[in-house]
Amino acid sequence: MKNGDIVQKLLAWFARHARDLPWRRTRDPYAIWVSEIMLQQTQVKTVLPYWRRWLRALPHLAALADAPPATLHKLWEGLGYYARVRNLQRAAQIIQQQHHGRFPRDFDAVRALPGIGRYTAGAICSIAFNQPRPVLDGNVMRVLARLYGVAGNPRAGRANARLWELAEALVRRAAGLRARRGCAALNQSLMELGALVCAPRQPRCALCPVSGACVAHRTGRVAELPERPRRTRPTPRRFMAFVVDRHGRVLVRQRPAGGVNARLWEFPNVEVAPGDSDARAAARKALGRLPAALEPLAVLPHTITRYRITLAAYRAAWRGETTPSRAGARWVERRALNQLAFAGAHRKILRQLQAGPGKPS
Ligand code: SF4
Image (cartoon, rainbow, N blue to C red; front, top):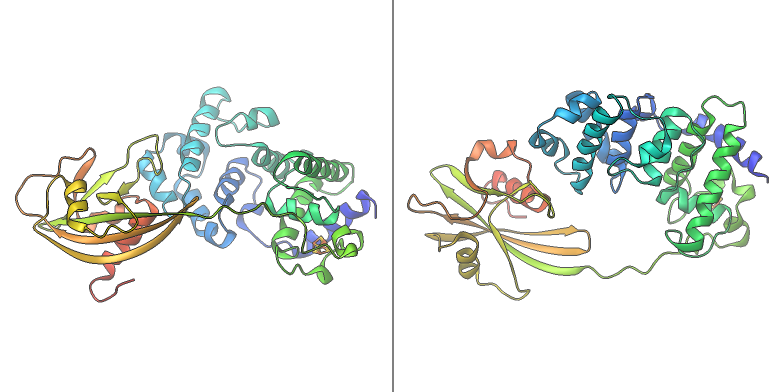
């Protein structure tokens, strides 16, 4: 089957089977860009409410450029990988300053924006502007590696370069057809096929519009392709965190700019050695002095990038008026805690706290 036939089949399949996602109903590059950034590392069903809430709160570029960081963090809270939201705002500010507030249409100008790599620039230019720019995310890699029988690590080296070439050949072919918005539809058909049919395990080849052309299907190599890089084992880390209460106010602190979870809020905490269970010593280290009482609250598992974290949380009673002398620490009314954007593991503590006694995790 030639590329032209593959493209025709993909377009016909997409027209019938594409999910009705809200960012597919718009050509606004801003709305499409936000969806693409949210969808990095995150599933569609998780992104849907976040995207809707974001577009209601910040309906255009200027609103994003001018939004207070606390608003952005709250809108993003729970999606993780917070560098994405900071890059979104920096990019919006650059567009305001350098492109007169209009989202650039030029691929190189789009790619030069913070947080936008080759994939995201290709997605925006093809979906919003129907330009023949290829996309290669995890779903598209899997489809193309199987369809064309591309061996090797799909994320690096020659195999990756070959997959980009194939993606480009297909979208250019789509541009040459009379199809309405063919480039936008072709790229999205590859993403959608990977999401709905050509799944990582047990792809539904019987329903696949291009099974007749698929090398992996024909040669019985579907389970082998694409090659999976060896996973590194996650590193275990252990933290102790302290929910310090004084007259209905709780001690929290804001993480410094520039590091992991920058500017997000957390309860005072310290990292401890894997077997260390001395909560009193950890409390003294985290708070500067020993609290009046300590009581276990919850033990919460949390995974972030390559770390498998265990977070042991304690309630701590605080006597006296002195505030623990830690940078960024602040007493906050209990009921106002929900207004702050917490780092993922600490939001779990907050939920635990609000679930009340008798509901351990
Ligand atoms: S035939 Fe199967 S393996 Fe090949 S592209 Fe279609 S779903 Fe994927």
